[in-house]
Length: 308
View (tube, rainbow, N blue to C red):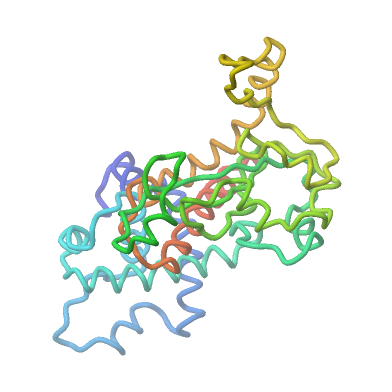
């Protein structure tokens, strides 16, 4: 691992060596605060002498977690890559993924909120932002065996079984919020109404940008400025070939250009293939942790590379 080229290291972890070293410093600090000792002392105290240590230091532990996020190997293959059994690979992944979550949550403004109790909490979290962008993101999952679960998880939009989440970013591509996962039948507008209860003044001081999955949002919420495109009318006998006017098409293009930053933010967290490939993990707790961590890793990367 230590002798990799910079290109190989980035392909393995999603981070450059410099970025990784900065994160490793925080990761180490979190471990030592949690266990009140160094990693080396922890290994000596908790493992039997005849047991071979596979992850010899915290560098290896962090690399192991990011490698799984970036490449999404099944646990048998992950174990083979790191000379450990399948169950050991799974246990190590859960343990150090949770430690990574604690590390990222400690950094102010890095970990995205997952839910809001009040408009006041929402406004405080946005840190003075005046313009925000919402979008939904879907990840394909394995087809559930249960018939009812199959119906709930089926996405008509993607024509397959998915998990869905809501994402909020600004034009600097910083992710302020990622909802907990919903099953695939949930649409963007339905999730939005659940996460942000109407008639509570969430957005009255904000300029908010949406895509066409949120058509009708103006009827339920108050905005300082609402930016959304035009949706083509439904096909009917009177209008068998509905089309947008040239002016409406131009507006849609303009809205898309403004909204592209949230797409970049979602693409940033989906650099980790564990969010891009068909999800094999059944545990929603672990899947939600991975989703939050990948969004936070993107925010962390933006912050450490921001011009000073």
